[in-house]
Length: 429
Image: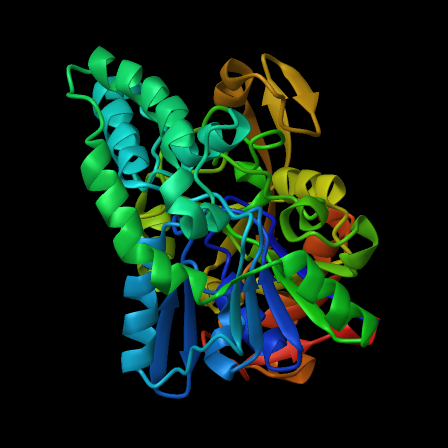
C-alpha cells in the first residue's frame, strides 16, 4: 500500500491545490482530515479554474472524496460550494462523496461569535477568516457540539441545545447581543438536514474497507504546519492540528496509514493575517513577489504578506510533521532576481539560534540571518525536467534541500498540472 499525506509546511497558501489535484488523479480515495471552509485550494485543469474550500480536491477528477471527522463542517457553505462546482460540470453524488457522521457542524451562532470577538479585539486581532471555525472546535472539545449524526435525530435535540445555548447566550450577553434564536436555529437545521444526511456515513469504516482492498489513499491537509494550534506561531494559528499526525485522529485510520508525507513548500514565504513573520519584506522586493505570485487568499481575497525563503521554519515543520519529501512550488516567481536571500538562522537578543522559539514575544523579536546566492536570468516557467532549469535555479533548490534536511520530491513551475518536475513519486514508495 502506498498512501500519501499532503500538508503545507509553511503558513498555508503553498500551492497544495495543484499538487493534490495532480496526485488525486492517481489516487483511489482523497480524504480531508482537519480544518474547515477557511482553507482554499485553487485547481487549474486545462482552461478551467476550480476553487474549493470544503470539498476534497479529488472530486474534480471523480475520485472518491471523503470529509473526515477532524473537519468542522458548515453545511450551508458546503451546499453553496457544491452548487458552484456542479455548474462547472463536476458530478457530486453519494457514490463519489461522503461526510463523516461524527463530524461537528459549524452553525450560524459560531460565525456570529467569531465576528464579535474579532471586532472587539482591535489591534489584538488574531486574523481569523470569521467563518466560525474556532468556536466550532471549542464546542467540540467542550462536548456541546451538534454533529452530522444529530441531524437524523432533531426531535431529541433539546437537551443538547440547552447546553449549547447556555454557553453561547452567556458569551453573547457579554458582547451586548441577544440570546440565540433557538426556533430559527432548529428551522435552519431541519431545512439543511436532508442535504447533509444524503452523504453522511461512518467514514472510518469506508476507509477501513478500501484500505483492506489495497486502495491508494491521499490525505489532504489544510492550512500549514506553522498554523498548527500546538506547533504554530501561537496564538496566531488556526484551531486544529495541521500536522501529518492528525491523519489518524481526523480520519479514523491508524497512524500507520499516513504513508509518504509530502510537505508543500513555496520557493519564498507568504503569510495571511496577523502574527510574526521573520523574513517579511515591506519594500519593493516584497511587492514584486506578491505581484508576480498573485498573492491573494483563495477564500478571503486578502493580500498575502511576502518574504524570502525561511529555511529555519521549513526545517522545523518538516521535523515536526515527519515530512518524507517536499514539493517546491512557485519557483518561477523568482525568475529574474539578481540576488536571492535565504534565511539560515535567527538572532535573538544577540544570540544565534536555529529554531523559532515558542513564546510570541520571542518570535516577534527574532531577526533573520541571511545567506545570499546568485539569482538566474533565464526562465523556469513551464519547466518539466531538470534540463529545462537554469543552473542557478538548480543550485537554489539543492541549497534548500541542504538547509531543511529534507529532499525535494517535485518542483512546480506554473499553476498548470503538467508543469511539474517529478524527482520522486510519492505513490511509488
